[in-house]
Image (cartoon, helix red, strand yellow):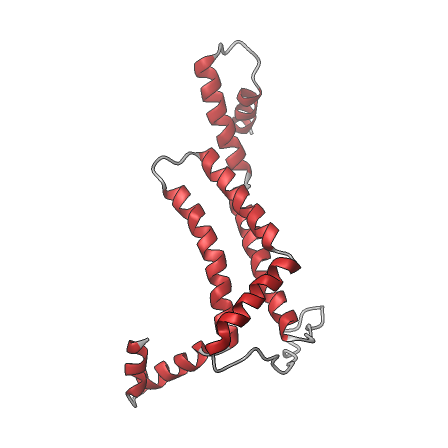
Length: 185
């Protein structure tokens, strides 16, 4: 923060930019999005550490991903949002800017989709939409990334190898069949 204040004292380009950054950082929407980003990234960082671990296996990745998705789905409700929002309101007491609902602006017709733009009746409703939409995007991205057919195939290959190492290959085996189906596809 001291470095930012030092830059603000300069009257040239960096000082002007630092002053603009400082003004933005004192706004509620910046603080809200910073806290929301922290909520999301601190949870996904745990998954990242598991994936990068040298002792990690595919099953650990899949179970950790499912657990993280369930966590985000669980906190994606009105009760958790209200708790999150209230906590942020209390923590933002020192900010110059309080939560305000910006004037509704219609986007140009060339940008409009088939649906009308949404008008919010309160700040809380606006930030609720930001919260829910952000969590929904994260859940969708995690599901798209970690629930692909290849992951199921890799699990079946692993199970097949373990089965083959411990049992006779003459026995019928669903894992073997799924691997063969993939290879013959």
